[in-house]
Image (cartoon, rainbow, N blue to C red):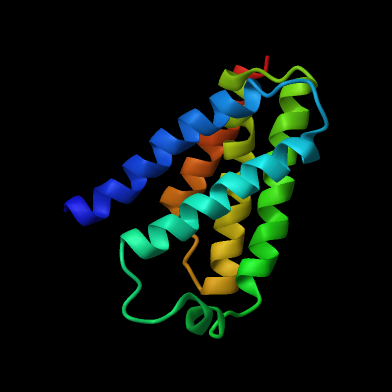
Length: 141
């Protein structure tokens, strides 16, 4: 059970601090900010690779098994982080900005799950999306 719950707890805790940090960024170019962010992230990732173990394979051997996904993820993460910085600079509130994007994202991911991964669109999922969208309407009024 712990192995199922701890990743979600990590996501929630880190996402909370992520939003706090994104809202608290100094008023400089967001891409200058992101260069520091990614340098810190790369250093921590490299450290954790060695501290937590790597299955006996070298870093470069693991790099040899890369596919397209980490490269696109780097682009996507840059867009996400820049988007949040720009959204907060434009006046979005932490309390409503995240709920707004999460509600719309829920709808998109139900469709992506069905189209790319063969996940079933169930009545419960549709009801959940409707509830998210109703909540989105109410919170942004």
